[in-house]
Image (tube, rainbow, N blue to C red):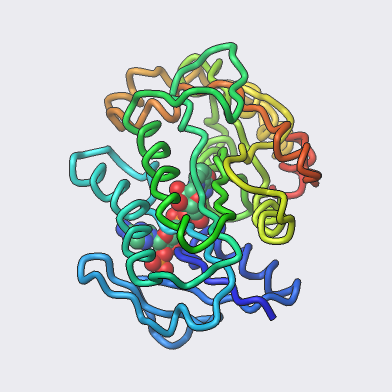
Length: 298
Ligand SMILES: NC(=O)c1ccc[n+]([C@@H]2O[C@H](COP(=O)([O-])OP(=O)(O)OC[C@H]3O[C@@H](n4cnc5c(N)ncnc54)[C@H](OP(=O)(O)O)[C@@H]3O)[C@@H](O)[C@H]2O)c1
């Protein structure tokens, strides 16, 4: 039985991924900042500030999946928040490798973000080979992916999934997007023209499974579905699926900037992202189009 250690396994992606992996016969264990004994999965504690990882976490593991990271879209990016966004993703990887030492792994798989390409609204469709953006959140993904290389001594299979907006039944972006629409006050955000590269949670988790099982998968992959849709388009599809009318005027960009400062950029800007590379590796999306994805989730 393959042992998979997941950092941040208690989160939105980790919870569903752990269920799927367990159903497929993998042994799942989590690395978490808190352990209370009631966890569904074997859970070990780590503490970045104390540079501590329970050494038992590493016994017999084959693969590490790194999902840990503080939420980027909750609140303003103060200096302290920016530091935490970076350290919870990157310093944690350095700590992991430091404690893992030379133990061999079949693969190290990490989350990354499509914000790698920069938060701009353009007509370009970004591929994995395109250069990174220069803004803060783009540079988070650059540093996140660069830090994966510390595992080169442990495995020759290092994978990062540049993830789009994960659509899920509970929590995440969809919960925030659907709330005003359900209340009858939904409307596009800003110009509404910003693209919103998205992926159904199920497809993302199955992509992690593909990364485990298909040894030809190595390096960077965009994790977004086929259909390119902008914010106005997505808002309309959510309203249609919920059988709600949209009548309110768009939320002006300046209001979101006042509320969220620099963080508003990830809401107000966005370009199209290409997914041919993962499809060429044999991955088939269950939900390539938005409407069936939302009909499943809402
Ligand atoms: N969801 C999305 O739309 C999306 C899009 C693009 C990229 N991603 C990336 O994919 C990964 C997983 O996403 P997710 O939605 O599952 O995230 P999530 O629900 O926010 O969960 C991530 C987990 O990270 C751990 N964590 C939180 N703050 C931390 C900190 N300061 N230091 C160390 N660990 C911390 C928590 O686990 P414990 O409390 O158990 O320690 C938490 O359950 C994240 O890195 C995220 O940035 C997600």
